[in-house]
Length: 246
Ligand code: SAM
Image (cartoon, rainbow, N blue to C red):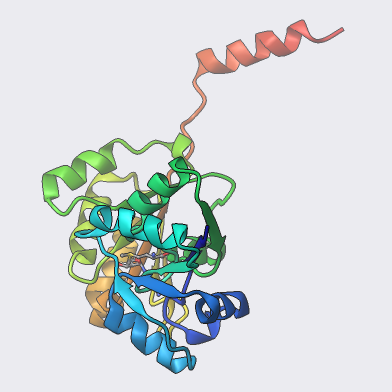
């Protein structure tokens, strides 16, 4: 049986293509790509010529049995998306979950992903974080999601597009407490990479003042203030501590 490799590709900077990713793409028999034209350009840049087939949200489920057949025939395959790590807000989940259940080998070839790239340089807590993909587009649904966030989620991270970033920052500045910390990571690994930080209304203000700040691709990160310890909670902890004292 062949093996399926899940191969991460750059999120903007081609130097982030790993040596292992290149070798894997050069060695497999066929590559499933979210957008074959996009991936063709990437492969051509690196001098790789391989058969490609389209694997996107609309045909993913139908492709599973073809992929399984190719693997049964001993072919090695790779899956890539347009940018970053496949399956992270990108196609591939249905294929990987089904193949794993059927006992096929699926091997990750790690590399860039916007969520980790943003977090590691934002200066917000990283010991615990909750990644929520994209927020809903509609205002009411978006507000509903934001209202449910709690400090226990750690740093909250989501992806946002240029069309929605201002709307989203407006919702954040209406709903979040003023001492919540917001970091907006834009155009990561690219020429105009920018990190903006402050309260939600400060970050909204920067973006309203300078239209360039709303161009490109975004990762939004939020650290909510820790809830204050109530007297009752403090007493409970004190009682536990007292018990363990000699
Ligand atoms: N699979 C990708 C990954 O591993 O990060 C994410 C794909 S998702 C469809 C695309 C979203 O990721 C963009 O709308 C943006 O929010 C975020 N993103 C991708 N590249 C980025 C970059 N260079 N800078 C900031 N955000 C980026």
